[in-house]
Image (cartoon, rainbow, N blue to C red; front, side, top):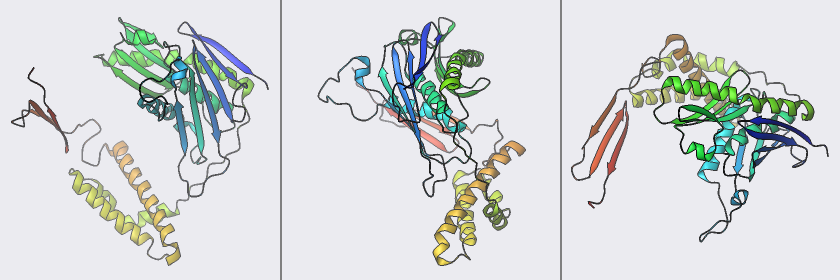
Length: 362
C-alpha cells in the first residue's frame, strides 16, 4: 500500500492531498485536509453502458455528519437521516464544474462520494468537495479533462479575502465560490451585498488567481499517483435520423417557434412535433414503432435546440422576438388586495408573482 501526499499553503493554512491510505477499492480516492477540516472524496465508474442510456449518469453525494464537528444530535431525534439542504446544494456545486469535463458521448455511470470527516469550525468544507472530487477523478482511470481548482472569496473591510473563515464571512459583503482550470473560470456561485460590477469582476479574478495553488498540488499528485486512463472512443454520431426529420419539418418548426405569446408558441411547436414524429414512424413495422418514435422525439429535440441556439447566435433573435439584450416588460403594483396588511403584484412578461403579508397589530 503506497501512500502519496502533496502539500501547499493557501491563505495561511496548510492544504494536503493524500491517496493510497483509504478506500483502496475505489478507482480514485483522495483525502483533502485544509487546516483541521478533512474530507474524503472517492470515485467509481462503470465499465459498461447501461442499455438505453444516452446521457452522462453522474451522481455526486456530499455527506456530512455531526461527529465531524465533535457533536451529538440533540432533541427528540437522535439519529441523522437525510442530507441537509446545505449538503444537497454542495453536491450540486461539486457536480457543476466537473460534468462538462467528461468526453462527449461518455455514458458510463460514475458515482462520486464526498464524506466530511472533520470540521474545524473555521474552514467551509464545501470548497474541499470540489478539489477532492477533481483530484480523485484525475488520478482514476476514468477519462476526465481536469483537474479543477476551487476557492471561496469574501470581501471584508474593503479587501478581498481568500478562503475566509466563518468569522470573517459574518462580516463579509461577498460570498463567492469559484472553480476553474489554469486559464479559465468554469463556475461562479455568488451572493453579494451592494457591490459594483467592477468589484465583482475583480473578485472573480482574485478567486481564479487564488485557486491556482489547489491546481498545483493536484498536478503534483497526478504526476506520482495517476492510473492510465481507460480507452474511450466517442461514438460517431448518426445523422440520418436528423436528416430525415429535417426533411419532414421543412420550415414549419421555424414558423412555429417564433411568437411573442408563450402559450401560442408552445401549442404550435407541440403540434408540429406530434405531426413530425407520426410521419417519421409511419412506415415502421408495428414491432419497431416504439423505437422509431423514440428516435423521432430525440431528433426533433436536437433540431429544435439547434434552431433556437443558431437563431440567437447568428441572427440575434430569441423565440419571443427579443434580442440578446432585451428584457421582458416589468411592472410592480402594491395594494392590490383590500383586506390584507400588504400585497404586491410583480409581473415580468407573462410571469407573475402575487405576494401577500399579514401581521399582528402589536
